[in-house]
Amino acid sequence: MQLRNTRNGYGVVARSLHWWMAALMIGLIGLGLYMTAQPDGDPKWALYDLHKSLGVVVFGLLLMRVIWRRTSPPPPLPASMAGFEALAAHAGHLLLYAAMLMLPVTGYLDSAFGGYHISVFGLFEIPMLLEKNEPLFELTVQAHRWIGYGLGFLVLAHAGAALKHHFIKKDDVLLRMLKDRPD
Ligand code: HEM
Ligand code: HEM
Image (cartoon, rainbow, N blue to C red; front, top):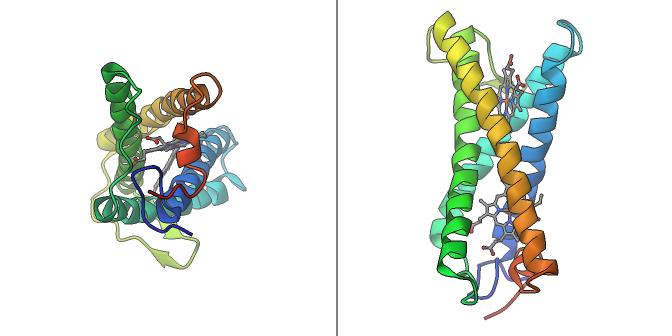
């Protein structure tokens, strides 16, 4: 098992973080949409608690991922990609990272401004450092919602691009995220 990234592909640490976080992010969009459509009461609030707990896990994994990325930089994009394609790929990745950061941040803010708590799987509580504030609650709920929807479109484009690389351009971009590829 190759732990670190090489010049030809992602190592097992970056790959595990990518796929676990991808599953969590897609799951959280689905859970977010499902739970908000439920009638108030049980099980809606339990689903909110689950959504928030998993969101806190995403935040923790993101911190580890950013530190690891600095320790072991990603492989360069294939030289066959045109300048604008490479630019679009980098911009897309940056937006995905921004969404992975801003969803937990706006999720925290909307809970705090709404006067709600965040209990992580019932094990411990995240300190709520802000006072209840109705206008800011409305604003951060909207921000969270629209960033969540934006992420949905971004993920479709991102996964579509990965499949295009694999099946149409037939390069190794998808394989780099799937298995060891030594230098
Ligand atoms: C569901 C299907 C998905 C597929 C097929 C997929 C595929 C890939 C592939 C092949 C790469 C490597 C690109 C390269 O070599 O430069 C990659 C990178 C990346 N993916 Fe995904 N991905 C998926 C979902 C997601 C999701 C849901 C997220 C986040 C919400 C995400 C975030 C990222 C980021 C941030 C990178 C850049 C990693 C880096 O270089 O730091 N991906 N993905
Ligand atoms: C990290 C990834 C996350 C994703 C992808 C995500 C996604 C979503 C989505 C799609 C919705 C539904 C929006 C709507 O249609 O109204 C939602 C709602 C919500 N999320 Fe998240 N979320 C994440 C993290 C968090 C975190 C960390 C928290 C809090 C700690 C949180 C708290 C909430 C709350 C309270 C709602 C309900 C808002 C309302 O009443 O409309 N989320 N989320």
